[in-house]
Image (tube, rainbow, N blue to C red; front, top):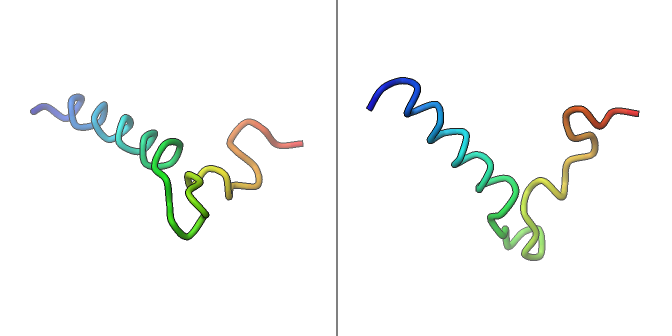
Length: 43
């Protein structure tokens, strides 16, 4: 594939990995639950 196809696939993978993948070390929660300040959410 092209570089743009790889970039799109990586973005989809990272979203799934960080927001939807259950992690046993986090009691079944996705990694994003451990982030203190999600981008754009700074106080």
